[in-house]
Length: 488
Ligand code: HEM
Image (cartoon, rainbow, N blue to C red):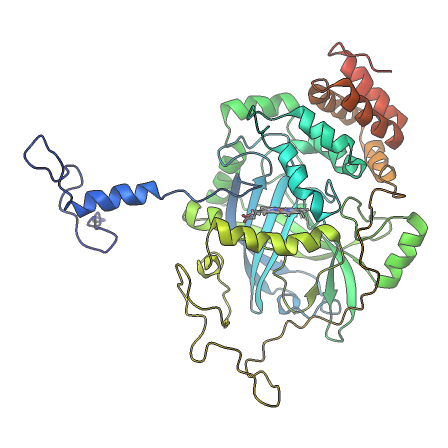
């Protein structure tokens, strides 16, 4: 028979009574020396940490990445070194705009964040369930997110703010089309693909760089909710996706995603850009599979639920800056902004030593000279805790990122990404790919919130749809008529 453990204070001292406070006589008042009562109330008052500024509602689990195909000619990263090699990982899947208690089935992109505990440090791939993003320059991100959050005065979500922003940012149309399609309301977290979205690079042992895009293809099959089902579930079971993922893993029905890569040399991207006019580092665009086929790399399986939601899922900290030797970034202006943003957010959200927490700590030996600070668990440094370079310039720690040289050029300036760029063809291509019923769903899904905005914004958005495909604009106009709105 299992024995219930003795209740103790945080210092491990047995608690005599957890039902009755220490009082002066049976009716009180309470005595300040009831340290257990005071500690209990104090800790309760400090139970919350700030929620993530975006992606606040999420579910997470532990899993394994297994290499199934050899890509060691592309990357010297040790996690890819041999077929069959397994690396522990942690994944968090989230909605974007809602608060920590918001409904899982809201129309929104889904975050798809992974941390791989490799022998050369943690690799974080922080993607979404969409291969593209709404904007292409990090400087627009806070403004964009403000339009997805609540109006500063009414504290209500605002279709006006959303479409005002989107209609002035035609580069958003590609992802807006995906958002209002059936893929905007996935049926739980298991039935959707994941994407690294940005262009990254891989570097091999000859220091040769290729550019890549990561794809995570669900082995559970794509399943989406209709708009009506999503709204119903938001009321009846706001934690629908979290429940589905947790229960699947708890019952041994482990979700899997195949890991694949699109690969291109710099010369291939130069030729592709010359042919298509698209900047290969613009995250509002995709690399068509016909131009860059996906090659298989491995398999991800989620096979262990987090033991404690707060310690693991809430406090996990992903950063796109975390790449290991054999990987590199790209000039993507969104990715570049993100390299700064995540660690900075986590310094505020969790604290200076958040990387010491078990879910965030590397599982390989590590050593840095970052000293002390609140909640320091590991002593990263022994003596001396400063960079110990000898007179010959040798760094005895042997620490090095291993990134290959990267030739950069250009005149520093603020280049207007809105001019002379084709933001419509790929959005139109996505629209044309949709079967008839899904096109109709897109029209109806978009017309709902669009019918609530003023005519000026509505016309501006419809003009973008017309440019992507005349049938797109016509379909949404027809759907608006069902709301009593006639815009020709
Ligand atoms: C410049 C653009 C962006 C900025 C400044 C930005 C910033 C942030 C910040 C500050 C967080 C909260 C981090 C935390 O508190 O732990 C976050 C979370 C997240 N972002 Fe971004 N983001 C950007 C674009 C993107 C893009 C393009 C994607 C996907 C392709 C993405 C995917 C995610 C995901 C999945 C999370 C949640 C990670 C988790 O589960 O903990 N973000 N972002």
